[in-house]
Length: 556
Picture 1: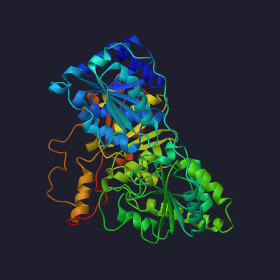
Picture 2: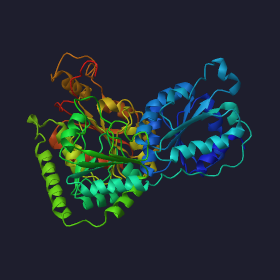
Picture 3: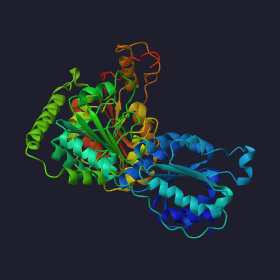
Picture 4: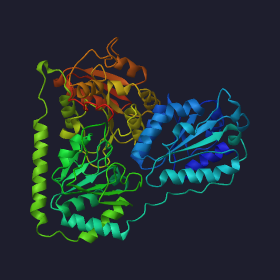
């Protein structure tokens, strides 16, 4: 057995069932080894960014580590956007890179070069082996790092001559190190501040979902009589969106977070950065009157942008358990506070729904029309994968989701959504998976449709086609105060992209809808078509979304 086959068997020992990749000549030993084993399937993608997105979606949907293989320096360069997304979402990915033979590495060959440098600062661990005997230790270190909270991507570089060498000893599976429990001193201080708080609030991030701590968050919120906000840029559902205390996702700018949390004397942030904002805005996110308690498994996040009154780097779930024990049963004063918080949440929800624009003249489709139609069409157990950006902004207002039924774009590199949906569908082919994309973001990862067709995966894709980069137009409005201008680089209209033809050419069935009254039927048809393979619905969307961002101050 050679080292290439050893690697495949080692991945299988770690529970990996699929290897996502786009191969090149340095990966030929791996391709030769694949037919010699039957535990791992190779999933071919047409571009490394799509390959990374598929692996990311597979890992997030399955809860398991996923494996990727890309081709030397150009391959990792193309994959860096996916590495960034995985790092931001704390997705456990093992990225392997085929490398030139060791004797040529320093000779600047046509195929070869530094594959570790491009991902420095993004991966949790990276290394390149020079001989087969080094691979077992490198494999254990990589897998342990990927699985240890905060989880994330790792990179292992594999020269061709190593892959064809004799195999090292059999690999035994390794796990990640568990997060540490909280220390008693900070935990007690947190409990005291929460018990004394008059208007507490709970902020729940994706880390709550990573530790399956949804019920513990709900218990803390009910014990405190506090509303629960989700973190900005979240990609998970930490609490059912119809829970009486779920207030919604925090907005993405400090100037918008501040009024949302003003009036709360203590906020406890669980499993999240405080705060990862979209861009600059006037003033801080928290006022001096609000004391912050911060719990996260990543020590780099504690105090990064906001100094906590108490910060704890520890398991979110275990911290919640011990906090609930320390707080004990709710005193009588909490009941009225809980009722008041639930009333305020219900009133805010009703106001948000009432504030959405109604049907457009001529029955053209506006972003709220599309969101309302999707909300009516989706079922409780469906998985929605959202990279719709502006056109899907109203979804969080009109839709109800529970943990495990929603994945959203968190990483900032476009082209994640459709590939992630394909990976999620591969993780559970029996589940209906719907991807939501804008026309601009779709083109960064549209080639994943070909993989879906090749694998027989019935992913349903809704594309909001507004003929341009509406997020940039909204950003220009935020920057300049003007809703329109003679701005280059925003429109995709000369020529207008034929998205149905593009998607058809990649193996999907397609349809287009332009009349809001036809959206329910078109979505029903989309679901039926997705039962037989990848299916696409392109919706012509009109109208401006609200401005994004603020004027920038020189020297800010």
